[in-house]
Image (cartoon, rainbow, N blue to C red; front, side):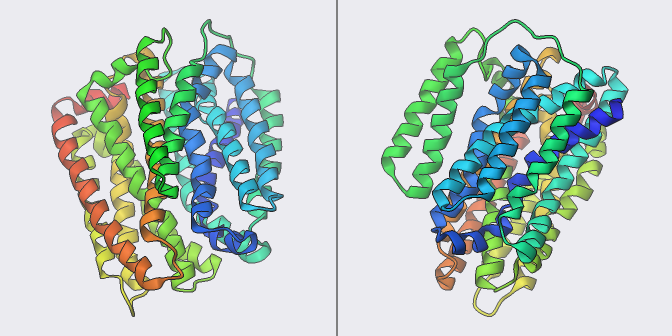
Amino acid sequence: MRTAILFTMCAGMFLVQLDVTVVNVALPTLGGELHATLPQLQWVVVGYSVVLAALLLTGGALGDVLGHRGVVLAGLGVFGAASAGCGLAESAGWLVAGRAVQGVGAALLLPGTMAVLTGTFPGREERAKALGVWAGVSALALPSGPLLGGLLVQAAGWRPVFWLNVPIVAAAAVATRRLVPRDVRKPGRVDLPGAATAALALGSGVYAVIAKTPWAGLVAAVATAAFVIVETRSAEPMLPLPLLRSRQTAGANLVSAAMNFVGLGSVLVFTLYLQDVLGAHPIAAAIALLPMFLPLVLVSPVTGRLTARFGPRPQILAGLLLGAAAMLNLLRIGPGTGYGTLLPTLLVLSVGMGLLTAAVVTAAVADAPGERAGIAGGVNNAARQAGGALGVAVFGAVAGEPAVRGAFEHGLHVLGFVSAGLWAAAAALAAVTVRGRDRGKRLARVS
């Protein structure tokens, strides 16, 4: 029974992660059918991740108060209904709205699936194994997204990319109701003011970048200040600010945001480059993107063992410096170049992110007290999702319309240079905030 619960929760997690990347390969096709502009295509991607990032911690708090089993069921229902709505979309605005509602469902699912597994596998060793399977399924969703999206778009158009979720969600909901016992509710309340100000800050910040609207940037700044004030005064804050007093925790979360800023932003522009500039069909583009994901899946488990032995800092520094070098390779793209020029960036960036992911999560949660480790992990996840949403907005705005090849390639040069600088700065930050081997083994055991 416990094995069945494990794979049911993994199915929910797989859908959450899959929908971060599955839609990218479908963007040129659905953009043509729905007559969507580049900013609208950006919102198809970030509408999901913005809401997921803004409500992720709230989803965990709701599970604590209302019971994680019920919240997982609610998340599956919302996610499934929103997926059906996306599949039926007749306009870009309709699709963006559906993606935002998908983000609500994902924010309920992601922390809930981990909490159910934690309760199902209470022993330390068995819990580690279960969460390892959960994390492995999450990693597999990244390469599966572009490949599955490409197959579906090539065979049947972009709508099945969303319809596919519906039967999987229905099966997972039935299994959750039958297998997962009701959990004990804990006294407390949900930080709604914190959730509202976080959503406003992140949403208006992304809108300011995509729409190039200064007033939205001002709203984002005011909302961010309001969020900090609300969290400081709240008795049960969504983001416990004392967690960030640790230099390592704060540094690791900033590095995580920078990692996804470049990683997810790159997926968007590389997909547009492959299909709209180089003329690749969806399935060919999906296969061409696999070198950006497969090394990540293969390297991540190795990184976990290296982090346990040497501490997180060496892997973080190596990953950031490799990623910086990979993005500088974009400066070689120009008239007459093709996939062979892009390939080193895909491979080396993926290896860099594989070295980063497990190490930076370990660093982010290492200083948290035992009872706050889950919250610290949620904060790190939210930082990564927020960084990814902003990355998609910025990368799309800088690259511009791929139809104008020269301007688009110039945009790739700018993005390569800026991304390399950002990751080099993140490496400098990690060097002074993340501890090395002296306490690395203890930290790996705590995490």
